[in-house]
Length: 220
Image (cartoon, rainbow, N blue to C red; front, side, top):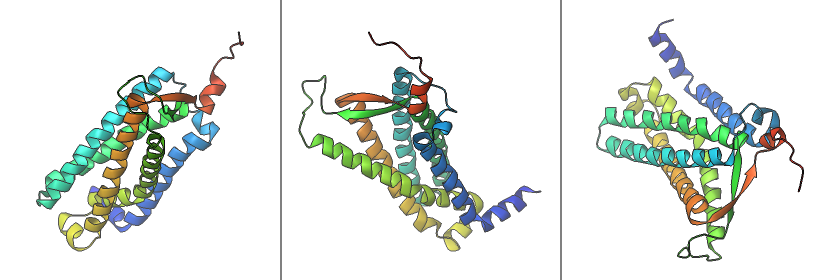
C-alpha cells in the first residue's frame, strides 16, 4: 500500500483515529493510578529516581511551552513550515513526557504537598496550599480535556495539505483551542512542580504496585 493511500485513508478517518488515540492515552494514564496489574508492568523505582524523573518532566514541559509558543507565533506570521515543525516537536515532547510520567507514577509514586519549607524566606501563608490545589486541579482538568482536541489538531495537521487545512478543516479553530489549553496546563504544571519540589516540603506516597514488591522489613 502506497504512502499516499495510507494518508488518504487516515484523512478520511481523522475523527476515528483521534478517538482511538484518546482512548489509548486515557487508558494508559488511568491504568497507572487505578489498575495494579498495569502498575506491576513497570519497574520499581526509588524515591531518588522519582525525584530525578520529576525534574526531567518539568524540564521537558518547560521546553514544550517554548515550542508551542513559537508554533503559535510562527503561524500568526504565516510561517507554516516553522509552525508545523514546532508543533510536531511539541507532540514528540509530550510523548517523551508520557515515557517518563507513566513509570514514575506506576513504579515509584507521587508526592503530597506540605506547607513547610527549609527556606526561611519562603512565606508559609495559609492560602498557599489552597492555591496549589486549585492550580493542580485546573492543570489536571485541562490535561484531560485537551487530549482529544490536541490529538485532533495533530491528526489533521499530519494528514492534510496546507490548502486543505486552511479551507476544508477546522484545524485553525481547533488548534487555537488546543494550544491555549495545552500551554496553560503545562505552565500550571511547572508552577506546581516548583512549589512541591523546591519551595515547600512534601511527603512521598509510594505506588501500590511498588509497595507490594518491596521486601518486608521488621519494625525496630
